[in-house]
Image 1 (cartoon, helix red, strand yellow):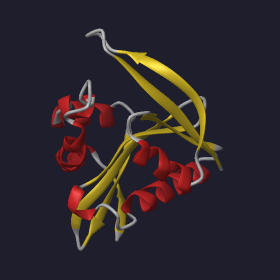
Image 2 (cartoon, rainbow, N blue to C red; image 1 turned 180 degrees about the horizontal axis):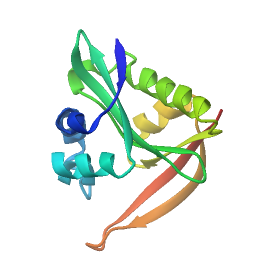
Image 3 (cartoon, helix red, strand yellow; image 1 turned 90 degrees about the vertical axis):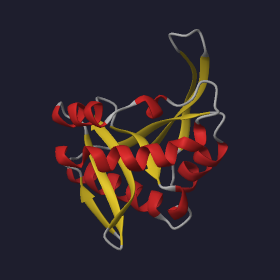
Image 4 (cartoon, rainbow, N blue to C red; image 1 turned 180 degrees about the vertical axis):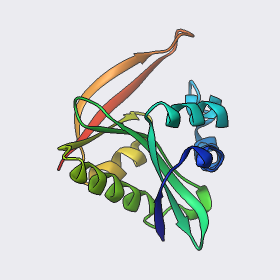
Length: 155
């Protein structure tokens, strides 16, 4: 297993992993906005200050996470592992890479948001030392509300 820092030219790899991973949420109401992202939108985000890690298994992309520094800490999102590689510790290795990066940059916490309708994701972050710090309702433009929790890990 190898974790590499993502570059702008990796946008298509990031997109591919993300779409494969988030397809399981296409029946959620509403479906994850990750499914609407494009290679171009990801490339633009990386150019503007977004960062990412890609995990390779046997030199093939298997997982990724995107992140950026905020005033509150290192905020990460779209953590994705392709379905056939889930359960092999890839997500935890990506989280560990985020922790190492944050410590290197002297950032004291990791933060993410998770839909309340995805208890397995909340459980994953709990097992990695994250605590729920806030619950809120995100209001989407189409009038649909999504209940999410913010989770944080102090480093």
